[in-house]
Length: 104
Image 1: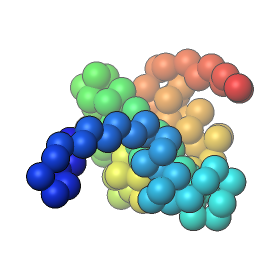
Image 2: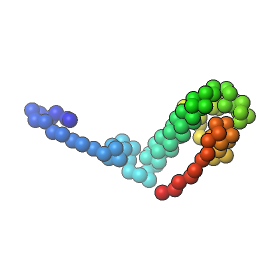
Image 3: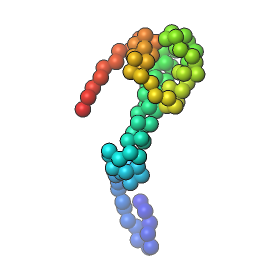
């Protein structure tokens, strides 16, 4: 709710409207850059949660896939882009999970 002057106005926005206002419409450079970073963060969160469920440390997961702990940390924090082959190695070989790809 936003109060303006002495009246109360209720303004409801969708999340897409918020993103449009903050980052521009879909397809603009700023919006695309935001969406790429958001998806990298999401992938990192999924990997972090799966690693925790598997009771592995970052170091143990790194050893299983032949990487360094710092690399796992950067992925989990959304600070690096990863190739699909790396995502596959992390989830399938490192964590014993299967990947399914769904396109809309």
